[in-house]
Amino acid sequence: NFWSILLGLLISAVFLYLIFRNVNFSELGAALKGANYLWLIPNIFFVILAMFQRAERWKYMLKPLLYMKYGKLLSATCIGFMANNVLPLRLGEFVRAYALAKNERRITKSASLATIFVERMVFDLLALLLILAVILMFAPIKVDGEFKVGATLSLLVAVTGLIFAVVIVMKPEGSGRLITKYLFFLPEKVKAAINQTVIKFSRGLLFLKNFKYTVWVSAHTLFLWLCMGISNIFVFYAFGFDLPIYASYVLLIVVSISILIPSSPGFIGVYHGGVVWTLHYFGIGADEAVSCAIVLHAAQFIPITLMGFIYLYKEGMTLKQLEKEAMKENGNGTEQEQ
Image 1 (tube, rainbow, N blue to C red):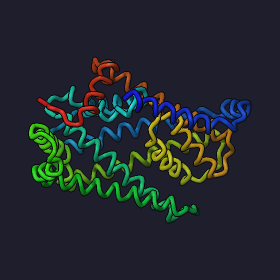
Image 2 (cartoon, one colour):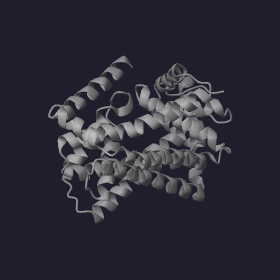
Image 3 (cartoon, rainbow, N blue to C red):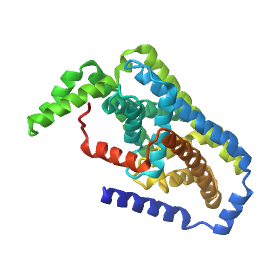
Image 4 (tube, rainbow, N blue to C red):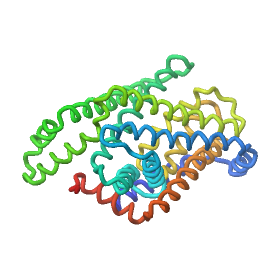
């Protein structure tokens, strides 16, 4: 974990160096000073609305298991996203699962993690690819072969994840046996634990058997990403950028890819790099692009982190406790649950 954390910090440092090396800091300061920050009000509204949508989507994912109070889901969602901003190693997803399981004993961490897996690796990815497809069909954007290869690989990942999830939910015991069949070198006790984890994991995917729930999850996914795209537009207005609406969604897609790169907590550097690259593509100068990246990041980082800490205090948890539990889940891979 030490080396993973160090690698993330080094990558963030490299990105920050590349971003700032050609920046005129007096021009950067002038751009930040000249921005109209009233536009951040609607920007932050849509950022927060997207968080509420995530919790609402999660409710439909968990409905086949049990009815969850919306407040508990919103609390776990905010705490998890806050954790991604302040803890290393992208522990936020494990924190979300832990925070929900701590609040609701009737749901296992495996089932909770299953919903998070399918939401991030399938529904979010497919929604972004759908938005990308619409942009490529109707916007005057030229893409090279490498970009098309990347989009194709992303589609394959999403479709593979969906097939994987459907197979597990339809045949949980058979899936567990198939997985352990290729892990013949492991002790029987470990294979039995993996089998049980697969079965528990499958319970978090039961919503895929219900057409209505799947449609609602898809609709909420698309809506929340539309909200995130709209939120970017207001920051463009704050800096006086005359950019087409689709530029906001190109930025959204590029940043979503760039933050997959290992980095420091809060995606510092890699997030900014994605914003700066996109704005350069649309003809924005380095100083203005970097200033916009700083504000865009802060406008998401600050409200989401504050919401997370408020719910953390409300739930009587501590950051150290969350990190300890999430590291344990991340390190164990399979857990023994009561």
